[in-house]
Each structure stands twice: as C-alpha cells, then as structure tokens.
Amino acid sequence: MNDKLIVIVGFMGCGKTAVAKELSRLLKKRCLDLDAHIQDLERRSPAQIIEDDGELAFRAVETQALRAILAAGEKGTVIALGGGAWAIPVNRELIPALETVVVWLDAPLDLCWRRIAKDADSRPLAPTRSAAEILFSERLPFYRLADLHVEVGDESPTQIAERIAALL
Image 1: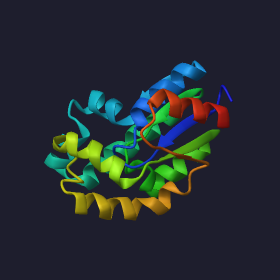
Image 2: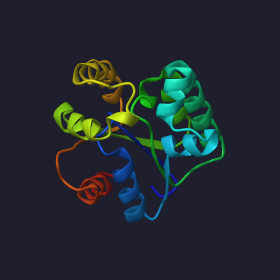
Image 3: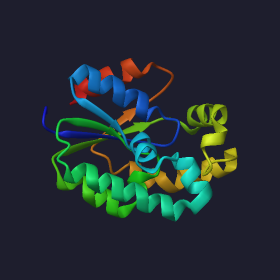
Image 4: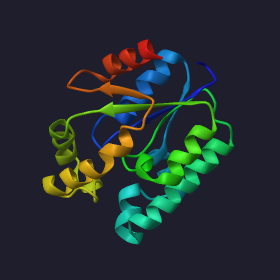
C-alpha cells in the first residue's frame, strides 16, 4: 500500500483536505491538495480562476496540474482533489493509470452546505443552497465510481482518516 496513490474525492465541504492531511500523517505519506497546488502554480485561487476565466478554463488548469502531478510519479502520496475534479472524464481516466485507491468521502448535503455557507466567498459554483443541491446531484454518480465509499458525519478528520486507514 505504501507506493499506491490514494486519491480523496467528494463534494465541496465534505472534508477532503483535512482528511487527506490526517491520512497522510497516519500512513506516513506525502499529502498534496490539488486546489492548493493550483493556487501555488497560478497565483490565484480556484475561485478566482473560475470568477475571472470561467469554470471551463479552471477545469483545463486543474487537469493540466493533475496530469503533471501524476507524470511526476507521485507514488505513496495522498491527494485531495477539488470537488469537481473527479466528475471530469479525463481526470477519471488519468488517475487509474497509476496504482491508485480512490476514496469517496460521502457526506450528506446538509453537512456540506453548513460548511460551504461559512466559506461562501470561495465557492462560486455553489452560491446558493439550490445551486449546491443541483451540483451535488450531478456529481453523485461520479463519486459512486470510487474504489472505497466512506460515509462522513460530524466526526473529526482524524477519526475519518483512521477509518480509511483501517479499510486500506
């Protein structure tokens, strides 16, 4: 398992970044947050890219960044994808090309929305609850394609990471 890439997917606000950090600590692996990586590369947040250039332009940047990470041989890494990255077909094709385990953090929309509402300025694709509900419904079939399904509630990122580690 040490050289496998672990990819964390799920809807915005489900806790991908926090869980990925805890899981990487538990498994003694490197952690990489794709959105933070994009921000470092582009000198703009994903929200800024979406607002300035549109979602399609952001998705192209996201796929390019993911492709570069995977080409660099990021074995033994825990990667937190952005909420929509796994819904993009080319990204779903890139990831299984390496030895990977894709973990879906299945959080209920109510939990995600509570977290999104606290950070609404950085969530241009879900400015309202109804927009979030539509996006959630659209992405759900793609999340279900993950290798592991981990239901998420109000437990801590450490508790969730411990459950994932036990499944791996």
